[in-house]
Amino acid sequence: MYDRIKTLSDTERSLVHPELVALAKVWHDRRKELESSAEFTEFIKRLRREWAIETGIIERLYQWDRGVTEVLIIHGIDATVIAHRTGLPREKASNIANLIEDQLATVEGLFQFVKDERSLSEHYIRSLHQQLTAHQDTVDAMTTDGKLITVPLLKGEYKRLPNNPRRSDGAVHEYSPPEFVADEMQALIKWYHDLAQDVPPEVLSAFLHHRFTQIHPFQDGNGRVARALASLVFLKAGLFPFVTRDSDREAYIECLESADNGDMQPLLKLFVARQRDALLQALGIEQQVKQARHADQILASALQLLKDKGERREAEVGEGLAVVCSSLFACACTRVEEIASKLRDGFAGASGLGEAYRAVVRHASPASPHRHYHYHQVVRIAQQFRYFANLDRYRSWVKLEIHTGSGFEYVISFHAYGHGVTGVVAVSAFTSRRVPREEGGTDLENVLPACTDLFQFNYAEPPDSVERRFAEWLESSLAIGLAEWRHTLSS
Image (cartoon, rainbow, N blue to C red):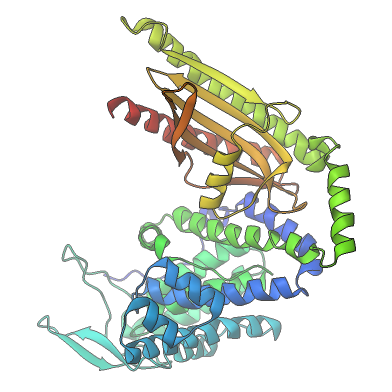
């Protein structure tokens, strides 16, 4: 039975993420000097293309590997490229290109909607659906006796028949009955306008997206419209469209199901993570904007870099950030030493292991001559998380070595994020195995991330918020690292 949608509860209202609030402040501080640049224009162009491509992949309107998406993001939507890269017939590739162009026009329209300071209405939502489905004429439907048929798609019109999907286990998920849709949509629009006055954009975006999907007012295309509405909220707050990649699909569906069951936190975390990624990418283009283009400028810039290298690393990230960095570094050292102590006690209590079994903690502060250690591993992990690790501007690390016949290492790296001075510090973690060479010395093998996500903080976030988030991230990272060590014992 369908449950009517509800406005935000007091608990849901309180689900604010200080991390995103602070990062948004950093972006707004720097936006003016970046948004008029050609580099920022290109960044927005590619972000729009990615939104347009991925929103259709999530719906399984088409499917291909990430490499095809990357080519289309860089070079534009092209049916010839789609046919060549995927092996699809040219007609099918052209149809897909038309769908993506419709989706691209939609996201470009969202930017214009915000620029024109228009107000969200049912009429606008129906026009979004009409634009998104301009080149989609039919939709699959199932008869009462279970037969799959194709029916015309009502574009920009609310559904006339139920569209409740049947799950793989045979259960039916109930959306709003057609006779309730108009009332439900009116309630949603009213609540949106009421909440927009004082609810943070990440909470409002997740709310609007989720409640819309509960209603599912159209025959098809509801997910695409929901992601457009979620993006609209972020754009009105001066942020970026909500891009959900194919790699997020399973988690995205699970988050929506959790929200259906009354827990909005997982969905909100996904929204925050994707918005954070976009903000960090935007901040990362600053160096490109400032890049020198003439020989004299390059020479002057190089000489300035040499001069800057003589300055203290702590000063380079800013005095306030340096204090927080030191606090987190000390927290990591203490927690890793606690783990090492438990390992040493465990080794000592087990008979027959010998002195070769030991746990050692090492670390290097920004002033240490050893701070440059682990360079290649840090860079490799940064590449996997798609950002630039600035190891010249700030750098420190904490390492746990576990020796059990072979060497295992767990490393936490603190470093500046992005080119130039972004005001953002990143923390990553990884594990590796150290294997002896026949001729002496050791080689590193199997370098793997020991975190599900990059930890980042900036000058605008209160220190107590950063420390609280870091403690949670550190525990998760340690669990991943120790699980990998346990795996090596049986391999």
